[in-house]
Every structure is written in C-alpha cells, then in structure tokens.
Image: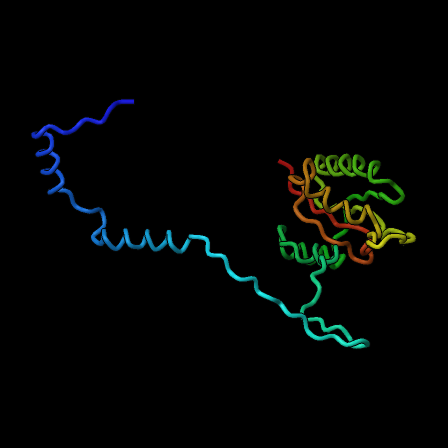
Length: 199
C-alpha cells in the first residue's frame, strides 16, 4: 500500500484555487446533507413495544362474530367467466349461448389424468392443423367420492385440470379462449375451446 505524502506548497496552492472555484451540485447543499442525516436517523432501528391485541369477550352459547367474509377461491365457472375475452365479443356471446356448433369434440370421460393429457394434446394439435376454430372438450362433472379427511377433495379431477393444460405449452399458444359449455353441449361437464387461426 502506498504511503500518503504531504502536498508540496505549489500543489497545496493549486488545490485551494480549485476549491475556491468549485460550486455545490445542489443549490441547497447544506439542506441535502441535513436530509441525508435525517434519513439515517429515521432508518435506525428503534424497538417498539408490542401491541397487545385484545380479543372480544365470548360467552358460552354465544354465536361467533364474523368480521370479514372468508376468502375462498372462486369456483371454476366463476374463474372462467371472469377471464378476459380474447376473441371477438359477438362470437364469444354466441358461443356461450350455445349458438355456435363445435366443429369437433373429444370425450375424456373415464380416463385418468395420465391417459387424458396426451389425448387432449393430440386432439388440439390435430384440430389446429386442420384449421378448426371451435372444439368441444368433454370432461364430465366428476363423481362424489367418500371424503375421509379433514380437507375436502375436489370433485372432478379432469374438469379442474383441463383448463390448466390448455394454458400451458404446447397448447397455450394455440388456444385463444376457454369457456364453460352451454347446457345443450354439456354444461359444466364440458368446455368450449376456441383456437387461434393457423399461420
């Protein structure tokens, strides 16, 4: 490490000449420095006393007071209905009212997730290659099974998984819109899948 040396008299004179011509970058240089000091002071850790939250008095036999509603995940139908419309609004309205007839359909009833996924991929890829726009994917509503655990299980594994698969590659780039089918085409047990135009 180099030793610090003292300035020679001519160097010191030059340094003072430069210092006299220097101007602060901010017109309020002193106040900027003061603000920096204040910020350091405010960022310093000051332990606070913990806030004691008191619970309301509850008497035996009294009903529990619910201050806020439970934040439950929206149902699958609600989530699909609230999804932004990517396709033509008129065509979307006609499709959800069951006025558009699907050009092809696949029925995934009775298949496991492992069997249904490759079948769905093959079907959508082939439909897109043929230039089809609207296809119907039938999943079924699912069967109610005995529920032995404390956490409720969802009914209809395929019904819940198909919209996820349609958003992921390789199908995601081909799919423009997914909507729950009208009653005449299967209702909650089927999906309309509107495909993008082929290039």
